[in-house]
Image (tube, rainbow, N blue to C red):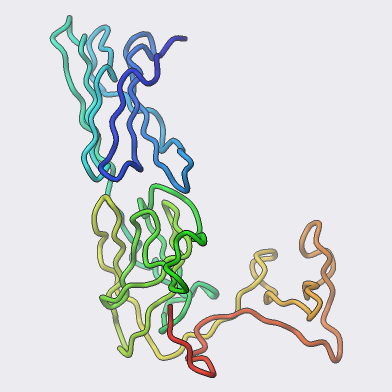
Length: 264
């Protein structure tokens, strides 16, 4: 099947979102594809775009255009309806946070605290999926955005570790507020709804192994051996804790460090 991908191309202003038209795809109906770039690698976003209501040999994708922020695409079909021509508009939905989608990143229970890992769940939270890299840091400062995705907690910038379309993992900022605080996500497609989270001084929780529904706390011995029942993790040696073992646990939300360290 001949589809002549690349017959037309358009880029967003930042050069990280592209739309590529292929006017001979699908029996000369035509189509277009959207790609985003992350870490120098391009990946397709969603399925191909084909406008509805085409009449005859439409040649959709013979021309394409993309808004500066990459959120709106227009696909031209030069031969639609006996060469009258037509165009189709596609809008990438903005981000939305689930009403109960802001939780402690270790326990997945409601509640946040300053300097705590939190998980945000929703839809259209990012066009890409990745964690931060060395290139995202400014000196020793943690990044407050990845690929245009940022989060505020009580109006203050959080530190973004992981982004994906349905989940973000961020480190909450320093904040003395107690009680309900607004949490909001911003992407190139716009700002999400605001979800209130209950902030307290502490929100302690231990990270767990994902196996058996998180029944066992994530822990290692001083030599790096995982502390867990034998065969808990496929292909990984795990041993039970023994008397006198020094065990390293991983948690979040335990409050200020000693000595104090600025969050971020």
